[in-house]
Length: 213
Image 1 (cartoon, helix red, strand yellow):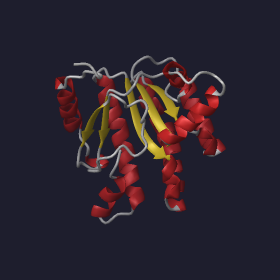
Image 2: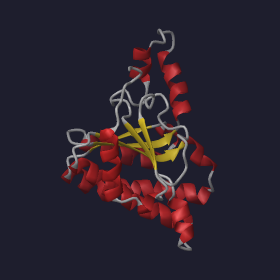
Image 3: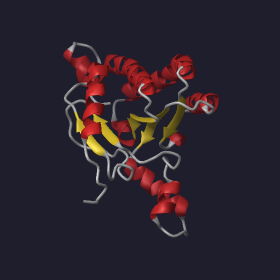
Image 4: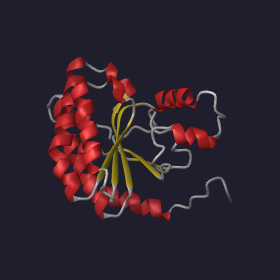
């Protein structure tokens, strides 16, 4: 969900204003995905590299995440959305960990779309943690899949990045081995439902061979 800071700067606002607007877009796109029958939607909320940002911005993002989960809990329930996270939660504040755990627990019986937030997530970090979990077991593809943060979820079908950058930025590298890639110049707060639908229509037209002919 790239482009929040640039979106705000274009409007003469501080970066945190863009993050607030971006949070609104998260729930809008999540509801649309749910209405369309999509089963899994993973959103890159905070990366392991984002700790390099200014402390004031990091603090704002953590507070925004807590407020988002509390504010949008009713929306998750009304839309039968299950909430999950991937990433290393140990570095988050105890208060935020509690909010996350409560949201997961209270939505666990929902069986519509699963909204997955990647928080303090980096694919390389995930792979390192996975290796440590496996320990002395055989390093088979099956054992790796079982030990990943995403062990309950299918591999990525469609990977979409907003904001004009054309790179994966340490996001779900293992799980995206056969993902269809889409890049748009649209900054995340401007990303519309109509563009989302258009990308999904394009995705449906693609032929996925998974290494076959």
